[in-house]
Image: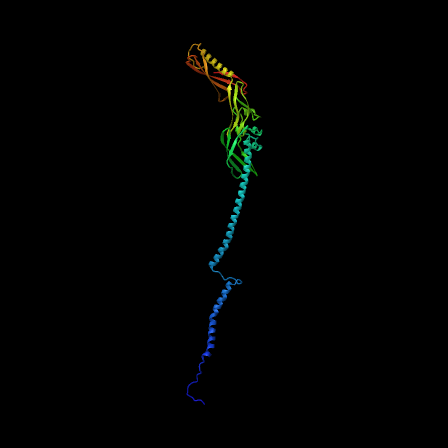
Length: 360
């Protein structure tokens, strides 16, 4: 039997080899416990990038940025749409302006071709003229200018339905400004204010009976009414008293503002002799028997003769159908000391068929 020593029996400690599995198991358990949260985090991270799972709640800043992105896209699309629409409007307006400008140019070219060629005026032009201002008879009769005008115009200025064109009109080496106005009615452009001007003929010792071969009514001939004509020089047929000789007749010249007949005339020798004789008879009568209307004369011998040394004839305002002559007279003839002027009027009548000579 074994020997007793009085001590307690204590089991011997396990060896190192025996302790290793137990410690290893305990470490593994603790390590597993420590790794459990990390595994959860890994699972969470995997869920964020997983496209099959819903996204986590966004922060306030992220939600604001997302909202701004959503607002910016429609605004940008709207802005682009406005630009495209505006470009379309500009393109349409440009096409319309180009079309209108072409239409105005065609109408203007046709009108100016008529004026510069001296061709008969169009019926549309007659319709645009005011009959109350002047007669449209000659334009309606399509009279042709023998010397057409030359017209140079600026580019038309376009409004909504109106175009204005500033021009320069040259007739017989004289240029004047003029303005054309075109208006659009519907789709058609027409000249509503052209180059035609109201011409009032001046009555006098030369009466215009025809313009470019077209008879002229009496009211126009006598200047009682004006007549519309395009700029240019027109041949005319005239009537004058038998005692006047028409030396130069350049025709009826119409500028951009007015018109007149250019002519010169000479008196016949018979008229000159009649005027001189009338003046001398008058002054001799005054020398013998002074009367009202006689010039103041010196007291001289009645045998001292008078002599005419100058005659000046002219038309007097308000007396268109007569010529007035200022006759200069002196005496004595050899050594004149007295000078007087006697007025002589020659009346031809409104029909230029009268011939009356009277002094005083």
